[in-house]
Image (cartoon, rainbow, N blue to C red; front, side):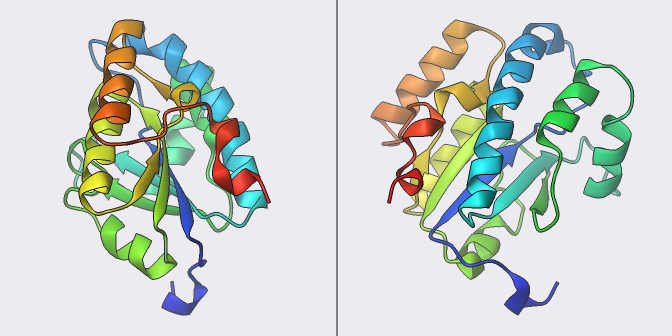
Length: 190
């Protein structure tokens, strides 16, 4: 992709780990809340695209160092599993961007810093899985980089309501994140 073809925006929407096989031991506890978050996030992503806000997917490579995001979307979107449903709900659209991450934070070991700089983003909306792990750690890294962060409570999921509430409280208090539902996003108002 030529640098000149990158969208320009003060805001960016980061979708973390929604393209996910849900094949880990704690997945049964996460699946229901993840599907609910994905359904709401699909509305958020449509609204962001309509406002010219870039949508960036940040996904684990699941230990496969030869992972290809497009192939992951294609494979995980097949069938009738919860993983397939979630993939179809948030499926990337033409013009969306993607980074593969080796660890929990979408910043660690990825080109996300450079991508956000090239876009001109100063504000990051973070949605995805899991609130108390990848979302919280990504929000912390964004905070340390001076970005304003909105982690909408209705667009994240955790294995338990307690874990989610604790993480959201930490992000709001310590990381100064806006954790209100996505409809409160500033870019939605003139």
